[in-house]
Length: 148
Image: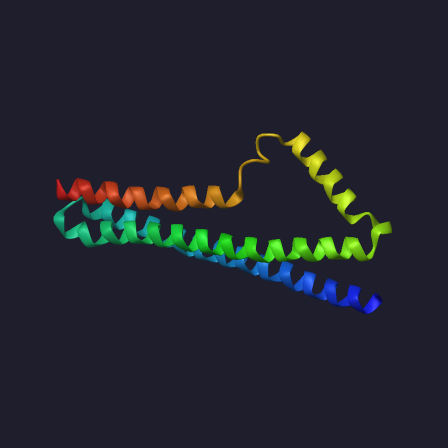
């Protein structure tokens, strides 16, 4: 049983590391896009909204759409690894019932939900998505202004 536990713990740690890696990638992509998007908007504001700016306004929309898709995919990938970790956690609880892992987790979850009833429902990836949606919408709005 000790060997099983060691293997499960190692795989559990790997799943958490993979989930963390996807979160780090999402942060890196967002940081890059948060440098590109204001640079595009700044350049457009300096040059004025003219037909020559249409490629940049479209690029801004594409940057926002890319951010939306990348953020959603990386969130899905992180959730995949977290779900695997939950199954491994469950198995560890089965192997070591005296540790009361599931009970402790349920108690911690319950306390957290009671302390943060509204925020608990809000997912972090939703905040990231709103940011990228805003970038895409600014690009669409500027494109429409230039066209019309």
